[in-house]
Image (tube, rainbow, N blue to C red):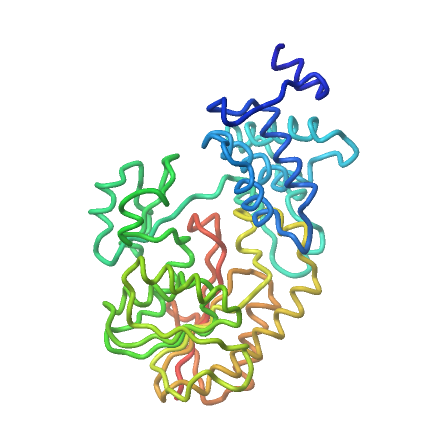
Length: 392
């Protein structure tokens, strides 16, 4: 049977057995991708459903899993162009055509047409520019962070990597290969982490020194904790807290592989009762946010995030800063970071904290500004907002 006939008529498709074939035919990739999309929703993010589905679909070749992932993410990336009444097969064909045309001729997409890339409500929450919209439709870049001072050595080992244009990131590499990085001996030896460029920028702005005491207040699975530890040469102490124990468990696993030992992982629910009475040289509040800065990498979130999420998270961020700030020593620095771009989660949070905390003074990150916004179309990573204060 011809592949084209099987695609048109599912009833005539032969049984596909992954244990007998090294690669899945195209229609199998579409079938699995469609199952992921139909199961995904606000409470079940597509990336999480995709991971579980691929884990269950044993026997898929690497090329097949990449195609399934590409179909799922491109479906949501180009969702604003799709006809919701069409069959999924037709929508996948449209998605492929759009993605290929954008990769080949990005200038053929007019600014007005790119307005489809995001929901309309976002325009009242942030400054939506054609450059940002265009960046959202491009394939995300995969960034690695080598151990401090080991960027050149890692580049020689991995190959298929390039350095960023910005010399401020001496240990960052963009990976352009197709191999599974998590299977490389360099990864298992803890020689690098997969970490977005904007996330690396946060650690560099913290600039922790060996022997200092820091608190990563919203540590999650530990990406920035590991970066702080590396910058500190594994000297001093980092308190890493999160409200979810499963994230702290993952942090401990990652720390062991990265040979990071100068940390303590503790639970903290974000409330006024702090996990320790320690006074810190620096506190990083990498707060939970609406994640608009990750919409290139996580396009499903464009269509599930709501204005109410933005408002609620803005309140959460203000409380986290208020509760964490008193733990700083005089002269200690407070760093606020969010991978979002809405005014309610960035400038408004800064204004509210400035009014509520007169014993903190903003620290300029440029010549005059005390805040920094990293845009995907400028840096090549996620969008990120950072503000810094010093306790008087």
